[in-house]
Amino acid sequence: MTVSASSSAAVRHQRGIWLNLGQFTLQTVQVFFVGLTIGMERTVLPLLGGEFGVAKGAYLFLASFVLSFGLVKGALNFVAGSLADRIGRKIVLLLGWLAGLPIPLLIFFAPNWWWIVVANVFLGVNQAFAWTMTVTMHVDLAGSHQRGLAVGIDEAAGYAAVGLAGLGTGYLAALYGPRWALLVFGFAVIAAALVVLIWVRDTLAWVHVEHAEANPVAPHRPDDTPHLGKIFLRISVHDPASRAICQGGAVNKIADALVWVMFPVFFKAHGAGLVEIGWLTGTYAMVWGLSQLWTGHLADRIGRKVPIVAGFGLLAAGIAATALGQGPVVWLPAAAIMGVGMALLYPNLIAAMSDRAPALWRGKALGTYRYWRDTGYAIGALLLGAVAQAAGAPLPAIWLTAALVAGSGCWIAIGVPADRRRDS
Image 1 (cartoon, rainbow, N blue to C red):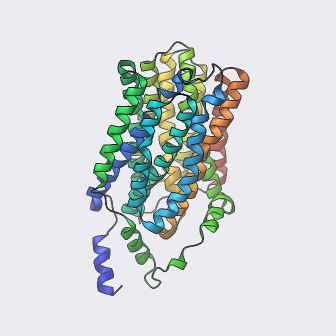
Image 2: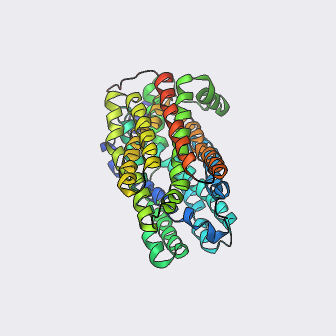
Image 3: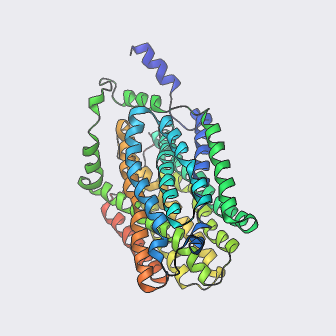
């Protein structure tokens, strides 16, 4: 690349949210659809186990649909990051949406729970490819001083959509039946996402310009990027701070698995109806989502560590309050507290990992983190399902999760160095 061509590329691919507002907005719309796709399951499916042949009290089998989702999403997060660095972000995003097409059909025609488990294999592919790409592309477009804000906007849109979908499908299922509600809702969301994708641009060009600016006398060569296995070991094992961030990601998904599987059953056992459960789980996700509009930006200003540790503390407190409560008068505020806690920790764990990764292998680093984070769904499904089944009730699983979340926050507090953001 000549000097003039390099300068021209740098001008066309300047980083910053406002400088790339059109593409940044399209990515935000994309992640909203991604959130709607996973959110449509949050209220309805855990309560339908009996219709699909899940025996009462078979909590481990009930949780198997989250197990399949977590195993697939965790593994493919890792693959998605590597693919995105090699073939481009947009192609991987397209593959994610194509993988979502079978989900509504499998749920609609399911004769037993195993079909739901298979549907969530496709959901894992969809979420791994699509959500990994939206957050990576948002970070690519933002300046280094805006990564927390960029991730916050991405996660705000996605989890606000999770909450809205959980609430909306609760109403639709009550009116038209769960199968029809999820079929129509699912296909409408995926079709709309594919249409919007036409106008989305790949962001690899921004990555190459960022690398060239950071290394003006060392242009990028393919051999510059460490091998995928080395990056995985560095993030997962060798770097203590990255290791602490990864475990924090896994534990927060154990908590989310609790909300996804056990909370609806717990609320129903205490007399809550379908719409009421939709409000409770939806409040958690919507507060989580919308609060990230300020929590990511907060961490850009004061550093990542303090918001992350505070978030784990609030999340543990909200889970404990839910366990102690006997009705919505306690559960609703507890859901909001959990949402704020998730908002403080969730985008800032991603941003903290982004801070530690060079631009050229940021996708692989984020893929490694997201592998461990979303494998937390599988760990949570196995662990919490087994505990609830052994106890014959979900309450011990709730208390166990509160303890794990509190312990994870302590690990972050000890294992991650204090930081302050730079205006760079």
